[in-house]
Length: 344
Image: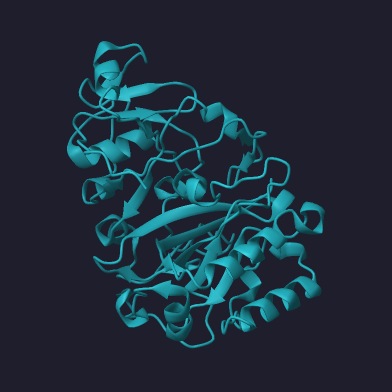
């Protein structure tokens, strides 16, 4: 992975999918041919993806909520939510190599009955994942309690606090370059497919500690089902001895069941094969098997499994502040997830 670029919020650019380019130095949109942007880009830097609002739309208001952290204003926005001014953001700049020559993949926008082709962001050379801190989440918590990852509205109940959707990054933006080895067979997309292990919460987020670093990811899964799996995850370093077997699991599942390998319509035989494959490696998914879907392969997050899967595995007791949470052996939150490319 390339070294991170030096990030300066007062001299940075954000790019929307419709081509809009915002300069924090000028506090306004600029042309891609603007002399300042051309000179800035010449140093090997690329703009960050424009933030999205709760509906998944790249709006000026969503950008303002990020820039308000640094006292920068978007001229079209009049008010800044007070909660935003209390948050602190840190952006990890991870260059991503995206193969735009592949057929367009369609990314379902959560809670919206519309689709958006990946090819529309062809002009964006690098995209970035947001490193999330407790300072960013604390204003959204209720009395410090665990925070739901997604909105769960019930007509007759008050909506529980949840993580704002604008904080999520598409997993492909950050991990796609790691999902394929250099030995890729253009005639068989399964060849060269690799997994990236993460330790992830998929239901709620306890209070975070300074370490490890966490990312809020939205991962496309389930083949043609295009399931959107939201998680807060920290990346693990896979033990080389397990890599061939775990990569083989992902390759066998790629496009399986004619593209209908999804958690909502999973075959019993598929679950059985996966359980047996893990057992051969001394691993299990006794509690997390319900998360099994194409491009997401779960393993129970016990300390034993973590130590077996990862080099320098984190200690479960130290990853978050467990106060107010109940952690038991048969729990799927958190889980070890093996993430890889989805076939659709």
